[in-house]
Image 1 (cartoon, rainbow, N blue to C red):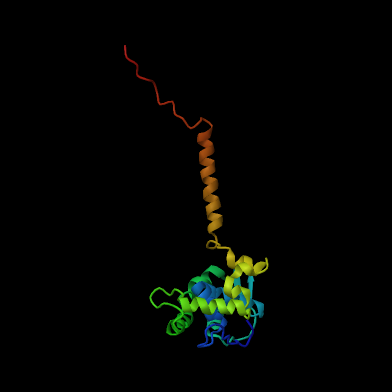
Image 2: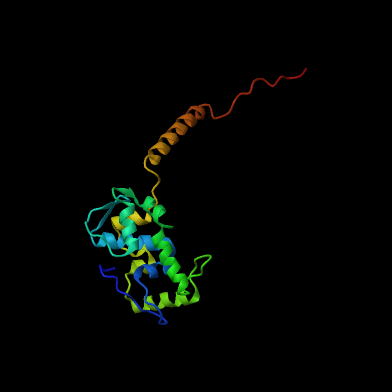
Amino acid sequence: MAREHHQTGAGSGGEALDPYEYAYLAGGERRVVESAIISLVERGTLSLQAARLRTIGAELPQHPVERAVIAACPRSKRVQEVFEALEHCDEVDELARRLVLLGLVRNWRRRTTRAGRRRLAAAAAEGSLPPYVLEGPARLDPGPVRYGLLVDTGPDGLGRTLRRMGKALDNESDHHAADGGFSCGGGGGGAD
């Protein structure tokens, strides 16, 4: 997605949609945020390494969703935290409201309508959108951006804690494994 947000008038006429609106039609709020992150990384405004985002460029993007992504990660932040912060932010909600007004998304469930699917199919056939807008980060070449967006990392420090807990459980089971895990249970208390 270039610096200028070209308006693509694919499909059955009507209002032109920007790439983030197509992303919403293709995959909802999460696809919008993924597409914004990928676009900003490609332009050198964000860095994505080890599933963490960091602002590195001085560019102030024109699109409100891109500005919201930049605002969500002023320092290094986990990608998952950015997704959680932005999936229901005002900028993405405003984008969804516009699509509802255009009749491309249903209001109450925010599902793509038949007209929305037709516009999306026309845009895909036209080939004017980056593949990740329509199909998500799985269409990216293998590398840190694809990995960072597709891998769901746990909270910082959680892995270390879980490993410690697992080792503690292993040590406990090793203690019981020596005797076969069975107890003698005492005598049978036989009868005469």
